[in-house]
Length: 65
Image (cartoon, rainbow, N blue to C red; front, side, top):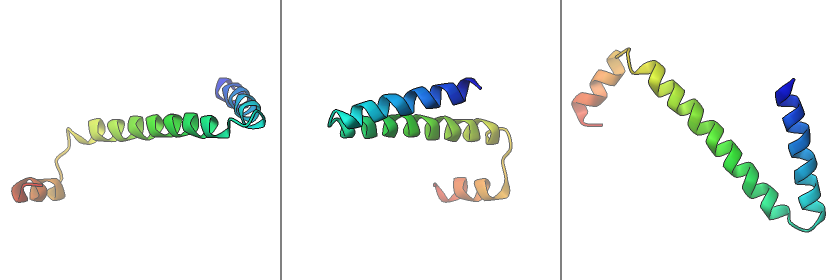
């Protein structure tokens, strides 16, 4: 519910910026938000997989990758 409210408020703010001929600012803000979300997901994946070493990861370590 909170996420929905934040999304609606963000959409209204971005629409306001777009109407004021500041559409590039809204796209810049969105790119920062999406980059941070992707970075958080990537870091969670790395933390979750750090305890488990699979066969593929061992081969990569041997090859120096």
